[in-house]
Length: 117
Image 1 (cartoon, helix red, strand yellow):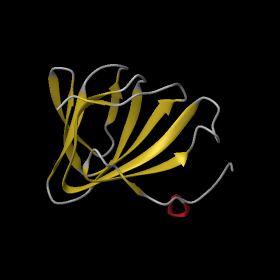
Image 2: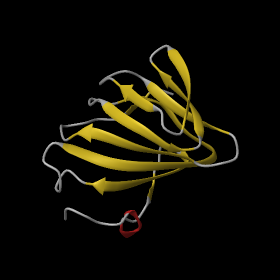
Image 3: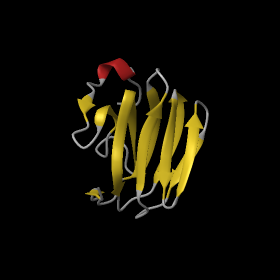
Image 4: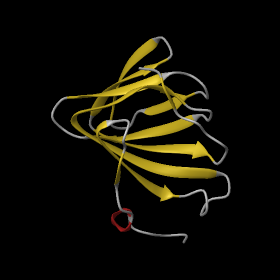
């Protein structure tokens, strides 16, 4: 389907996260090269330190968060672009009282999430 509304995609709870949901907006079955996902972390939400076999390209749509990438910690907000290389440990923690929302594009390659904490 070339065009659809975000509201047509049911959010799913991210089991490894806290107060976090994911919507797969463009699935691997729909896009031959990349998948597009939308994450929403409510205030107090987080994702633990983990690794993936694939890189992540992200666009922050709303809110603020701390993101650890390797040994560095960044504070990000709306309109920031984030790149996470394949295999690099990373984590997320919301800042403030509004949801942290971002798009995450990943290549359609085999992936494995390994929780490090």
